[in-house]
Image (cartoon, rainbow, N blue to C red; front, side):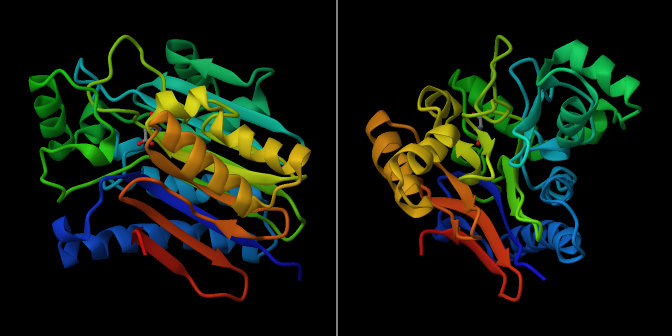
Length: 313
Ligand code: ASP
């Protein structure tokens, strides 16, 4: 059997070892392991990278620890508005949704847009109407209510700031949650990537970050790599991060690692764009770079050991 590989992230930001309890650390690691194992199950039985990406992200969306699906952060109006995207490297097909409410698993909606509509990107009420048509699962407002996320909103409102999920001060670094993503390579040699988020706490005016934008927060191309980003979305959009890495490989012949280093630790740093990403190439090489204090991340290759990381090594 050919090799498969998978990596996930649960967000980047000011995640400090000194402000984490052993119990919290355990629950994040458990959440990440559950997610990556659900993707591994599909890949090890010959399933598609696209389905593995969806399965891993669903697991993270259903976990209130992470800023996606159930744990999505609150907007200025006290709502949970979610963004998600997914892309298949073989066909360059992609699907994305932004500003959707009450959708239990936004990544599944993004996949449905890709597979069952003639479009790539749907927003708000229209996207939700499409979800109804696809008979996807809706959840009431209280499903998405997580007290800690609400406290973060109240704190952000006090200073009128828009806060990246891991950089809140309200929990003194104890209860960090984050945007989620997954990249996978299946035994058929196909790559896929996806990202899902509630965005940034206290966001206003229908703000949209990089996570649902193909080329910025998510990209997959069988000739190069699959990428899922997390960080301050405005900078990731302007730097077109995910596609830039693919282009550096395709047109300049850089390796995955070289391309990621250049974009995450040089270009984004010069810009002031805090965050990181998970990246996987067609040969199964994985790199998980970030320029923030930490990034929840995990990776696994067929026949290899599970890697789980939170802080800088
Ligand atoms: N990139 C996300 C956004 O800007 C936030 C994050 O990754 O934490 O919406």
